[in-house]
Image 1: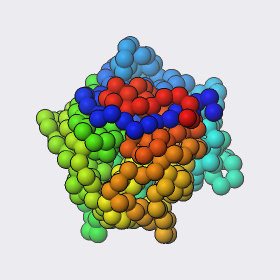
Image 2: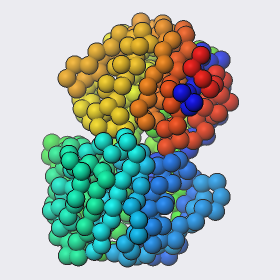
Image 3: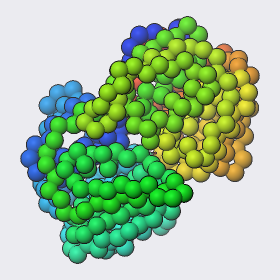
Image 4: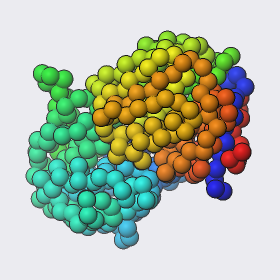
Length: 444
Ligand code: S3P
């Protein structure tokens, strides 16, 4: 276990934590920059593995993509419909977002693209995007179960569709909308519950014509007018709320902590964790709320305090879909029984997160159950036992969640492989240690 890390009880966490740029927004900035006419300058780009794979893919598709300095990237795009056939397989690494959004982009370009990824990504379902893209006219050859590696044969004559999402997935919505960019006519996606709308906001920012309407029953319809002229823009990427969640929950759990997190993305469709933690009694202040390139951002100030159990309704899941692992850690340290409902989608993330959290928390002495798609965590307000080594199965959020648990447990918690953390949060251990954490190499 050469990449193992162990996290022991932390000193009070204090100071300012500048967490890396938003992963979802970073992928989209590179993709739309590659399609826009003229120059796009991105500041605060997440330079994690996942996003670097997307940068390489956009280059392979013909865009000019240059790193100019820390988080600062310049792109010259090819214009909508102007991507060129890549001359090799695109390896999207660990990134479901990179792979699925890219499948949408190339589906309406008349050439063939081969995609693969790491062992985690090669196990994840791609049929959910193949199905609507097939209706648009693209063809696919994939491994059994609709898994990577796969080939996308893009269509020359795309058909504009109206697609009702069978699952609440921003990735599927985005794949269809990106395919709609090079499709004459109107492409509409109807979602059962609103999911993160970074694609919509960024499309507008680059000049696309997009209509969003709320339908009865909580559904939302997004209609894109095809073949717009996208124009290069400046994009300032906010700090990723899904990454901020780790120092934030750590500060709530470690006595004596107070941490400031500047310029965190506050998109309401990503804010489910903040709402839930407040319901649990968290001392979480929002300061300097402002707008950054069409996205709301604010500085967060979080102080340690006791947390009480809560019930998280299924309807909130899309607004905090990546935050359940770290919420489960908070719940393990809270007083009472926390029930998180409707987490079926967690089974098809970078790992089966429902199983991974249940197994890992149990190994750390926490009483936990999975009932159908619900995760139930029992806490007594005291530090969990800890004292386990967790297999993270190429899942960055499982890795970081258990390192945070170690900060608040009686005995240290180790993870077997920290490499995956670099997909979304390069420098995580160093940043946490600067605040007061005690994370070091090894398992004991
Ligand atoms: C993402 C959407 C979510 C999320 C993922 C990023 C995106 O996935 O889990 O980390 O950037 O669109 P789903 O859309 O599959 O739920």
